[in-house]
Image (cartoon, rainbow, N blue to C red):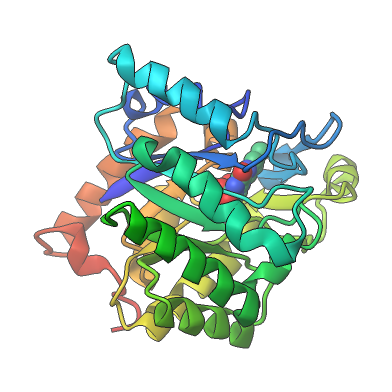
Length: 307
Ligand SMILES: Cc1cc2nc3c(=O)[nH]c(=O)nc-3n(C[C@H](O)[C@H](O)[C@H](O)COP(=O)(O)O)c2cc1C
């Protein structure tokens, strides 16, 4: 069982890479990285609704661009500071790149980061880059995946390519994206990104946070993320792994994601609200839950609610 943080680090530049495994994460993800450098949206761009255990962010992929990240990671590796756990790179489309040119935007970033990641997550679901979510439509997806696969083949392959989906698409849309991705040989899915939907706020602070534009993460996202995990698990018939992410902040929510079909987990918002010990707490709790269920390994719990 892996636990990971999808680490847009506070500076957003893949700088905190070595710190995450010490918290108990057994794989890590940096990003989102774009082909071209970009500053992201003006600050403030992240907001906390404490009583809801939710964040709203509109970071907008603030990052120095794939080439600069590559150089930084190359230096990190040379200095012996590379983490000993698997590392994923999360790739987004550059804001200035139109959707028609998205395939080469994604594949160029992947190519630049090829030697600095064990797997790649194609993020076609961030709500904070105008038009980006349209890339989940099958025609766009087909072109992006074809080009990224070709690039991967040129490099000799061997690095899984995952697709990160939105919780805001209808079930039919999720299934259509998944089917196309499977036809194009996708190696796994990440479910889900943040949502544009807002729950009914509990108080005035939450009301003002929820009025901010951007993607909502944390506890209110958990139910829909779980549904998307289930949909994908049913659709893929467990042929490829699903990374569960969205509102995981406890043993119960982690177990729900696993029993809905996730074989890998990530969390982000819980680090903000629960602090770093949330990770080891979940890992310990999951081990206990595995034993209580009479399983030998957590793998036996994957998709338990469905099979
Ligand atoms: C501040 C912030 C920045 C994020 N940046 C990215 C990103 O660059 N790429 C991406 O795919 N997801 C990004 N996400 C979404 C998370 O990876 C995750 O899918 C989402 O927050 C749901 O998980 P959570 O409820 O555990 O936070 C970001 C989330 C937050 C809160």
